[in-house]
Length: 298
Image (cartoon, rainbow, N blue to C red; front, side, top):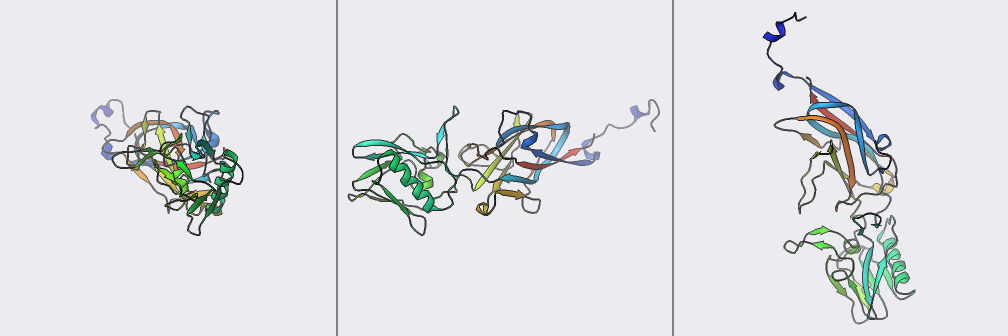
C-alpha cells in the first residue's frame, strides 16, 4: 500500500517496465455494427478500447468459399465487369455477357462463354472448347475479332511496365493478354495464347483491417500502387469444401508497431477484396477472424 504523498516519490511507469498483455477477439460478421453492410465489408466495435497496442496478428478464422469466380458488379458507382467483352462480327459490334457463376473447370467456363456468344450474336454461330491444358478455342463460320483493347471493356494497363492495374474484362480469365485486340484466322478460328485462369479472382482473398476509420493495419506490401493489406488468405483446394479454416499453425501474419505502439483502438473496419480491390461476394454467409492483440499494461 502506498500512503498519501509517497506516489510523488516513485518513478513514472515507462514502456520498458510495463508487461505485455495478450487479448483475443472473435470478430464475426454477425456482430457487425451496421446492419446495412454485408459480410464482405463491415465494422466491428471492441467491447472496450485497447491502448498501447504493440502487436496484432490474425491467428484463426473461418472464411466461406466465394460464391462466384466469374462476375461483374453494376450496382455501385465504381461499376466493373469481369464478365463482359466486345466482339466484332460481320461488321457489327456485340457486347457479350458471361453468366456470373462459379465454374470449376475450363470446359464449364467454355460452355458459359459459348452460351453468352449465342445470346449476343446468334445461336449456333460460335463454338467454344477447352483443351486438356485449359486452352480455349473459338470458331465461327466467318472471321471475327475480340476487341479486348479497343472495345467497350478494356483492362487498365501500365504503359511502361505493362502491369495490369485494373481488370475490366475477362481477358485474363480466358487466357488472352489484356489490352490487345485479337483477330481470328480467315477460316474463323481463334486460340487463346495462354491457359484459362478461372480462379484468378478467388484463389486469394486480401484482408484489409482499418482501425478507428483513420489508419490501415499494413502487414504486406504490394506493387503497382495497390493498397497494402493486413493479411492474405490463400484458398488452396477450396473446391472440395465450402469454407477455409485458418489456424495459428499455418497462418500467422504478425504486425509489429515500431518504434511506438498504437495509442488506442476502439473499432475494426474489415474488407475482403480480390486482387484488383473489388469486394468478394460471400452471398452474405458468416465469416469470422480471431485477432490477437498485444498491448502494454498501464
